Image (cartoon, rainbow, N blue to C red; front, side, top):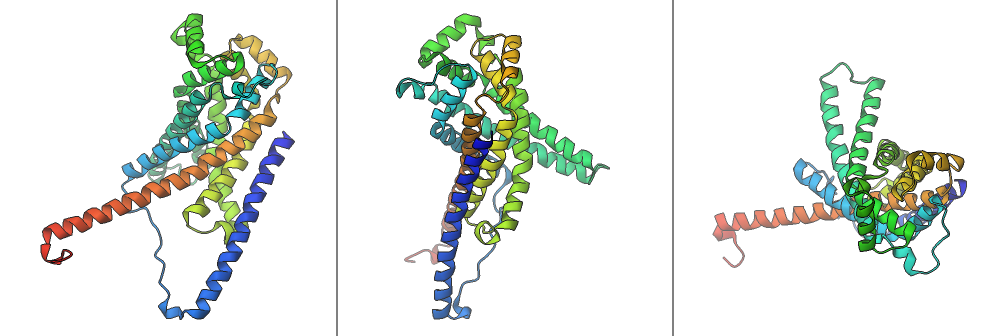
Length: 343
């Protein structure tokens, strides 16, 4: 547990050191440029807002950005997931390099689907809660935070429920070292459709707690990091936001993963074929077995998820604004041919 957290913190420290160096170089360049250029000639930056993008479009960007970030994060860290699963079920590590790729497509798909659904559903529910609080007597009370946390749990649980079948296939492939079609056939023979939802109760419970912890803490963690390192993480650029998301996501995700390792073990054991009571007893004997790999992997995943989300959303917004600007120019030229180029 301590080693997993230490590894994540070391990685975050390396990112902070890189940002500090980059910031220092930029300040030197800016200082040199300010000496050569009069202040009156410098452009005045305009604050970037999201008011020009409809809410439905922003949610679409959030969904696809979260999905792509989730697929990438799971693919990059799949080997760590293999080690974690094999530790959970008490089996030796892979003997060949090819065995570390079992279940990679299903794991990537499940992570992308889970993160995208959780983000959009949580954003929608939290906004409805904010609107309700403004009109109710619960405004400013502690019960509002509890309701917000429960809504985050519901959003995370919904994402986990929908992604349970590909997770079952992925875990079965890893535990038994079998290809995709063999895993699907054997799982179907073991119980049909219900077999693909084995462990869904513990999975929903565990993900609800872990993701709710992250969703509720990633914002305050970002604010704390900005207050501690305002020069490095206080900017509004896409790279700065991505770095801030990576660090905050890594810190909160690693902690949440370690804290919920016990129900994760129960889920993994039931998904690979063990009965619920036997899985509960086995996991209770070693509640933090596999937590080292789980903490490192989830820290990296959460970091890539939130950092990648910031990059993808910024890219989608830039493309959207560019397309709208181009469309507006075309419309003006169509209505006023006299101002068109070459007129």
